[in-house]
Image (cartoon, rainbow, N blue to C red; front, side, top):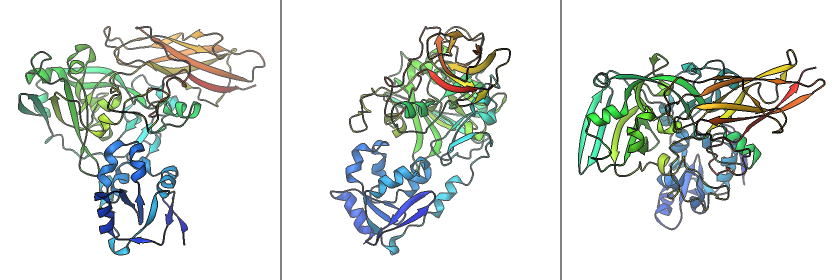
Length: 482
């Protein structure tokens, strides 16, 4: 007999067949791959090649996946529960039921968050800033800065915190810096936007076909003034130069850990780390205040122009290595493919990591579906634009008629950084004339940067299985109040 039980929003199907834990572990060692979820036993052997998380699933062989799902809360959707049920072969024996109460401790010290944030997942916590609040401030208030977590937020003590710098150059040399020792280097401020590579993924999802990943709208980008010391100053103090070390990559490791105790890690090329135009910081402050816990307290990397994932929070170590980071988050994520690749055909080992972001823009006010009231025959439209690699936004164009005509934004707020160091976003405003009797208006937005890169019109050609680099024209429809 099978019956349905609803638990935390997911239907969990109960089967009468019982399986001993020893048999599940044995199956991992033999020809099939079994896992446990709650009281269910699942043979997921045939699913292994298409698992979006790559070979991370192998860590759960013969074990419960609940500790992993506790950390990677995006699994707890009805769609994934239903998929898992298709692999169910029975129930675990009552004598072998596993107590997962200790896993709640992982989340017991999460910081408080602003209620205005739009929560996408609660465990780990991921939230974006509401569109209209994005354009209310050039520098995003700390409490409204979008939050992207991969694991629980670690609790760290700034007085005791140290960061290791490990240089692998024939022999391995390690130095350790407290925050007080880092303060001996010149302090620097950099105004920079951080953007998730999946920003605006929801549009790609809706306009083409489903992708894997958090369904961000346009709020996974925020702007701030970061303060700290330059990474290149610290590396050079440790004897690192592009010409005198064998290492070609800089690996950043944070204090946040997954269900198996593995720390979050990713890397960037050494040339990128040492390029003065990139202004990469070891930051302790954000908008004049200490980093909040959600944003890396007490120390994080800030890699302007790159996907925010490279700006590792709660920084514990910096390693100069011949190889890129071997972590799952570096090797099996934040890479892009052509529109024809599927999870079955995509080869992450041949796809280059994303180290720089393309140009993008979004309309923030009004929002899609809003009713606007014209004033003196026009409506005001506001939004943001951004380009990676230090390029400056030089123009934003808005079309009120699906691309037939374009109107250039008459207000464009940018930073005053030197050439090739424009790491901030731009905020723009444009006034659009409204025809008498007009009932609605379709608005398109596109930006152009100082390299004269602009956005593609459609998502069809840039669609990819991970939904990253989603930067086609932003399009909304508004109603005109009579």
